[in-house]
Length: 93
Image 1 (cartoon, one colour):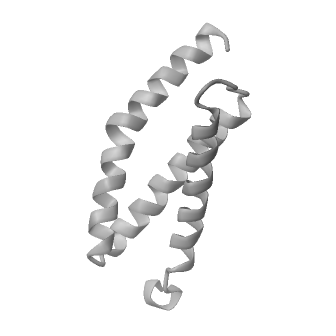
Image 2: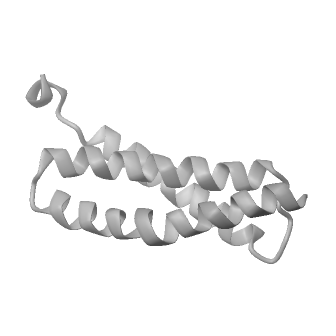
């Protein structure tokens, strides 16, 4: 990986750690209480994790974290799909 891409990857990791993870936990807590806005926020954050780690896989980051990237991509994909399948479209409209 070039040094330009490495700087962007480090910045992405900081955003994920300090912004996305706390938002994910807060959205998960409030969505369990039945808030529709929190469920939309949770879907957006899960999509963020899905795309972030999918990019990590596609950029050929073959290192010791490669299996962790696969696990994170897979779990965020299935959590995102399951969450989307639980929406009641008639209630939203």
